[in-house]
Amino acid sequence: MNFPIIISIKSISLSKQEKNFITKIKPFGVIVFARNIINLSQISKLNSSIKSLNKNTLIFIDQEGGIVNRFKKFEEFNFLDNFELYNIYLKYPSLSKQLVFLKSFITSYYLKKLNFDVNTVPVLDLPTKNTIPMIKKRTFGPNININIILQKILLDNLSHFGLIPIMKHIPGHGVTNKDSHLTMPITKLSKVSLQDHIKIFKYFNKIPLAMTAHIKYLSWDKNNIATFSKYIIDKIIRQKIGFKGLLMSDDLEMNANVHDIKDAIRLSNISKLDIILDCSSNLDKYIKIINSFEISNNYLNFHKSHKLKQFKKKIDLKSININHYHQLYNQLLKINGF
Image (cartoon, rainbow, N blue to C red; front, side, top):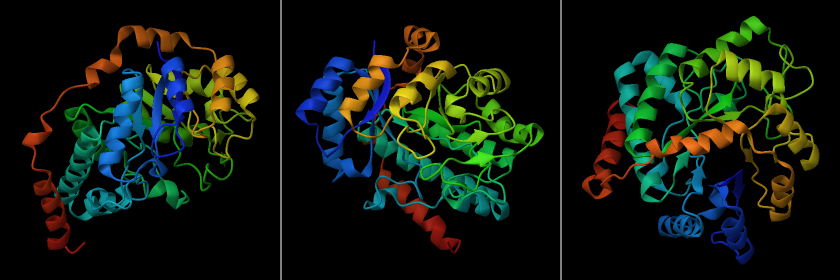
């Protein structure tokens, strides 16, 4: 069984120590960043080398497109932000749906070709007038019905290419104007107001993986961010939202996590997280996590049921003329003046 940790690696190839770690520990996943990518051939080989060490370790990437883009130097991944596509939807719904389809189809095609297993989408956060741009640009806007329409298109393409989705940032990152990478966001929104933000997560609660928000929701828990809150995970995420899948933390390296690794894992054990995400590339830190993080019953049951296997599928990529899809995307933008 793979250990429920998602790690990162330091460079464009695996070090001897990283190879030994993946072989011995069998992490649930390895997440890839821009620092790990030189060109498409290299990243494909890197991902294959990880798989050769443990075939069940999943290869993750956070490739939303737009502001969050691990392939910024590559024209193949040059797309509008989601919020721009939402604004287009307000005037031209059909055009927006076509652009979302093409963006997600092209992205999923390349991720499959490059041997990725998981893309950390969809972003289900609903922005408000005060939402920080770093989050707002990544969303399909504040309207739940529009979100559902556009997110379904995205998810259909992930499914078509056999990629596993992760919904984030549960129970909603749109409630704050702070960047959790830099500081701990705190919201005073009432329980009634917060209900609007969890509705969309409830609609998509059958997605197999979810990532927590490193936010302190004072109406729910005055002491802990959602990641470390037993109340939020049990009463809000598990019961109100009805999410039964694997719940992973956002990156423990983010400044919203004010705890050292010992306390962070202690709180994770109390809150009943299923998977730890840590992007430090620090193998010594990973050993500390492995020695103290308690494997949840939910993780054990999920692992035994092989629920993620239904997402994996083979597809004939050679039969797809991806340049045709690129041309359609660019022509739609040009014809419509974007």
